[in-house]
Image 1 (cartoon, rainbow over the protein chains, first blue to last red):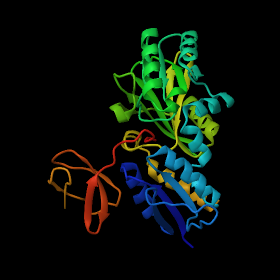
Image 2: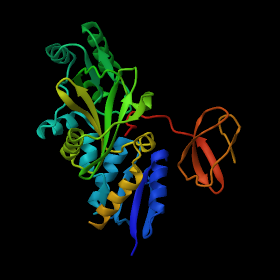
Image 3: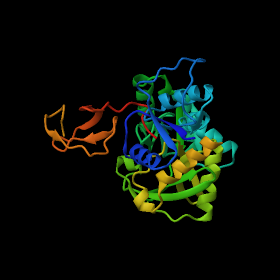
Image 4: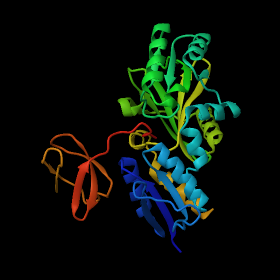
Amino acid sequence: MSTKVGFLHSLIRPEEKLLIKEFESRPGVELIMVDDRKLAFNLGQDRFPFDVVIERCINHSRALHALRLFECAGIKCVNTSKVATICGDKILTSIALEEHKVPQPEVRIAFTEDSTIKAIEAMGYPVVLKPAVGSWGRLLSKINDRDAAETILEHKVTLGSYHHSIFYAQKYIDKEGRDIRSFVIGDECIAAIYRVSDHWITNTALGGKAQNCPLTNELKDLSVRAAKAVGGGVVAIDIFETDHGPQVNEVNYTMEFRNSIATTGVDIPKLIVDYVLRVAKG
Amino acid sequence: MAECPVCGGTVNLGEDTVEGELIPCGECGSELEVTSIDPVTLAEAPKEEEDWGE
C-alpha cells in the first residue's frame, strides 16, 4: 500500500522543487499537490486522501490555518500547527525559548510608544525592533538612539496595521559579520551554515553568503533544544555567537535550504522526506 | 518555450517544470509563475506579501 503525501504549497521555489523530486524518487509514495490558492475547507465534513501533509506555503497565515484544519480532519502534518503558531510569531518563540531555558538575546515586549521607549532605554541602545510576524529580514529596525526610537515607533503606530503596534525589541548583538543557521530534523541537528554579510542583517534573502559551519556538540545540543522548545519537527535555527555563548535568535518552520545543500554537503531534502515518511507511518 | 507576459520575450522551460514554479524571464528579469503546463502559460508572479517567509 502506498504512502499518500499531501504537498501543501503555493508558489514552487527551489526548495519545493527539490522536495517534489525527492518524493517522486521514492517507491511506494504517492505525492498529491495541494495549492493553498485552490483550497476551500468544509469544516467537519472534509475527508482528505493523505496519510500526511508536508507544509511548504509561502504565506504564514495560510500555512498556520491550513495545518490546523488538516489536523482537525485527522491528518498528520509536518510541521504541526503548534510549531507554525510558535515559530510564526517572534513573541511566542521567545516565550517558548524562555520556558525551555534556551539562551536568547534580551527581549522586551510592550504595547505603546511610551512604554516601548522606556523598555528600550532600560535595556540600552542599540536595539532591534522587529515585527512579531515577518521573515526574510524585512522591516527590521536597528535603533541606535532615542531620536530614531521615537521616529520609528511613531511611523509604526501611524502607518502600520494594528499588529505593528505590538512592539518586540531585542538587544542588538554585534555579530561581527556572521550568524549561524542550523537545521534540525526530528531529534537531530543535521547541518549548519554561517551566514556572512557586511550588513547587520545577515539573511541570505538579503544577500548574506552561506559558508559551512562545523557541527560542534554545543551547537547541536542548542539547536535540538531550540527545536524541541517550539514543538520539534523540521526547523531551522538562527543563532548568534555572543560573549555569553551562543544565543537563539529565531526558529523557522518552513525552512529554506537552497544555499545550504552544496555548502554543507548534506542532502537536506532527502532527510526531510525520510522524516515526513516516518511521521506518515506513525 | 513560452512568451513572457511582461516583455513578450521567449522563456525556455525545462522538462521538469511544474505548475506553480517560479522562474525568471531571461530577457526582462521579471519573476514569473508557471500557471499551466499543458499548454504552458505564464503569469507575472504574485507580489510579496507581509506574511511571506520561512
